[in-house]
Structures are given as structure tokens and as C-alpha cells.
Length: 356
Image (cartoon, rainbow, N blue to C red; front, side):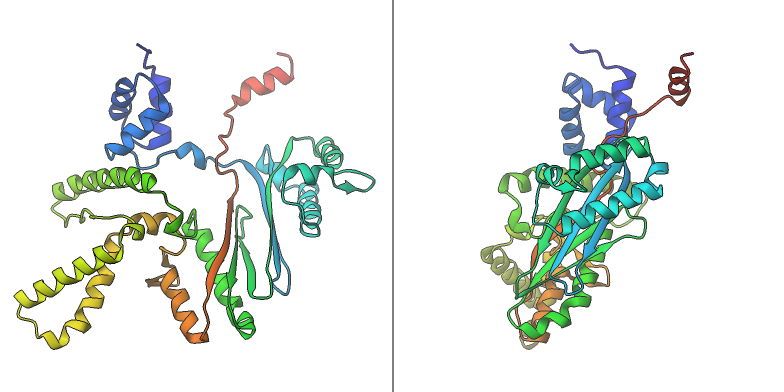
């Protein structure tokens, strides 16, 4: 059996925020497999962050450019080794030049970028020269070019710290809608920067993914309820469902019948049921779409009107403009997401450079 070391327990704790004893028990149960231990803790409701290490920030910057007519937006993440270099004027100039090169081309991958000619040499050679000049390793990690057609608008938002950027495209049918969607598209980008949705819609979830997440989410709520009960506070409701993908017409019709039976039992006049039931259904949907609210742009409650989801905001805008407004593209970059920053012993590093 694999030895469960203190270092391994600490690593799992750093990645999940679970207690030391829970981490040790999880590792013992899965014979030291760290990924299986993470899943074990999730299923037991003990992990608040499935992969905290994924949020460790690398240094550098995200840069964004949106064309004045909102027909195109480009975004690039460029990583450096230290925050000190990221604030360097030479690094900022490199970022601006790289963004201009990408936004003025139709390239969509790093290989094509490396082969573009810049000042008589390839971009890759240009980058190497800048690395030599700046004195630190620099990597163009990822980028996107998003263009709009005649029936869409593309807008973006870059947070003031240069560490989070978003781009969203909206489609419409009526040409006159475009000018009226500039503010909404920008606000949606700001929402996405703050709330971190991973995808546009629940349609992108697989049934297997929903089943797996439901098990973890229910365990998480049950664990929270243990503490709420201890404190004498109101317990959270354990949801029957977690995504709108599960709430088909049959499910909603059955729930509506249950509401009618309850109203009848409460002797509520049937004449007012149609005013009560829509609100009850909205509440039921809100309580049973927790996964959508965490991970999908359309399922989240809008930060500028937290009584309505983004999907409801778009429906309202569509009715206002007598049009059909749809989100067709969404990109969000957070600096260093998914990169585990290497920990260095500063004293040893200095000693090695001085040959001590």
C-alpha cells in the first residue's frame, strides 16, 4: 500500500480546503491517488474547491481590443514569470504589439501566430528577442479572434487589473437592434468577468456530467445543513434536480398539478391560481437549477438585476425590441487559470546564482 505522507495530505488540503483528517482518510481510501481523493471528498461533500490549484495565478497580462463598430474583438493572454516584469514597459509594449498582430489577422492558433512575419522575421524569433531583452521567459498562452456578421454584435470587457477579460457576441434579426445592444453586451461581459460562468447554456451539459455533479452538490448541501442545524438556523432545501436540462415539460406539468392540489387544500380561490402558480414555478426552477446558476451564463442571476437570470434579461430585451436576441459566442480568460505556479526557495535560488 502506498505511504500517505504529510506532504501528500497537505497537497490535497491545499487543493480542496477539506480538513487534514478528512484528506488523510480520503487518501487512505483510494491508496494515495490524488485525483480519486478529490472526487472522494466531493462525493462526501467535504471539498469546497475541487481543484484549488487550478486557480493559482501565473503572472503576466490579458489584453483586449474591440473594434469601434463592434464587428470584431480580440483577446490575448501573455504570461511572464514575475509580476515585476508584467509591469515593465517593454512587456506592455510586447503585449500591445502582439494584440495588434492578432487582431489584424485571421489566425486562430499559436502555430500560425509564430509563423507571421514581424519586422522581417517570424513572430517566434521576435518573441525570443524580446525574451532576451526583458530577461525573463514569456509565453503567448492563448488568444481568440471573434468576428460579427451583419446580424450580430461583439463586445468585450477587460478588468482594470488586466487579469480578467471577456468577450460576448449577441445575434439579432433586425438591423436597428445593434445600436440598442451595445450597453447590454458590455454589461453581460462585466457580469461574466465577475461571476465566472464556464459555458453559455445547460444544453452543453451531458447527462453523465449532471448525474455526477448532482451527487457532489447534494452531499455539499447536506454537509452545510449539519452546521446550520447545529447553529439552529434554517436548513437549505435538498433539490430534486440541479439543471434546467432535467426540467422537461413533463416534470413542470407534474409540479404545476402539485401546486394546484396544494392551493385547493389551502382553500385558495381558483380564480387567483393563475396569479400564484407562475411565481411558484419560478421559485421551483430557481431552487432546482443550482448547477446552471454556478456554471452557465444564461442560468446565472444578472448582477445588475439579481431577481432575473440572464436568459430572462434576454427574453425581456427581445420583447422590448420586437426581436430575438441570442448569445452566440462567449470567451472568458482569467490570468493563470489552470497553471500551477512553481514554488521557489528564494534563498536557495540566490545562492545557486552566486555559486554558494
